[in-house]
Length: 447
Image (cartoon, rainbow, N blue to C red; front, side):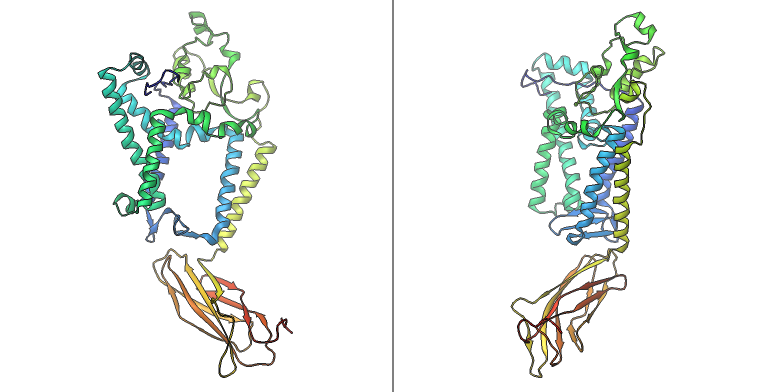
């Protein structure tokens, strides 16, 4: 596209309309709304979705997850992994053609901009082969300027998930956030102007391991040679419904491949070639020669959507979802930890009582706007006296308070006694298990 070197075989995909392009455009619109609007939505005063890396917490539609909720991150990663396995086994590379950011942004922004400024495929190709002229130069400069603006916009939109939309777009974010935005801007601009389909062909690992995830019954975009061959440009082929070798399926392909050559790792299953073939064969009154199909179907075998691998993948997905649901139902909307105060093991007061000092840390993960009061109780120590401060926290607030536990003089005291600290907020309870130390003989651990 840049024209700086003749070593690269540039891809000039022709614009196309059709059933699958319409489905993809609606899908792209939904994904854009999710990206652009979600960071601006608030639930109970908190972002609907934000990954706050410095604070190590995630806001997700009214829920606040912190580092203590790592199990949910693990479940999400497992869910994404097995979803990839499951949907690839059933539908092939549906992610690449319909949801990958690379595809979504190129189809939604870059190709329409090129069509608007430089014209369609043949016009762009003809102009680029003539070398640098004033007409080509101003069009390239205008296109790249718009590409840069789009890159900044998309980088800001993506960074809003991490830095907060209002802070980032109003200039209130920090230098780290804007530096990362600049890096993402450079990446997108480089990708849009030069790298493009090479990302799918050479960098993305999905194309390499999809062959291990798919099988003969996975859905792929396929050319049907039984109906299309022998291909020839002529009236007889048009009458027979065979391939007339118009090459339109090649012209529209964003990867620059010929789907008639069979299954290829570069194919992102975008179905542009299907819409292209439909537009030609439909006018001739015949069925398309390129369609979603499977190897089993082409060989006349029965296609099984549910087979051992899809059943196993589906069962694992159900188990992950069920586990996540149970854990969410049992999840307590706060977290608490207790640690012995640094440099303090135990203290014997003037009345003979033994005192241990702890630091109790509580974080409120309840997204509600009403402050939450926490009750603290100690059990497992006979006659223990608890001295601490009242704790009342607003949403996302964290506080560390001293927790002093005094035990009256007793000949039954041992060196180390485990006990329980119970923290409750009315909606849940967390039980902590520290130990109480005394001046009893070393080695004494209990009756």
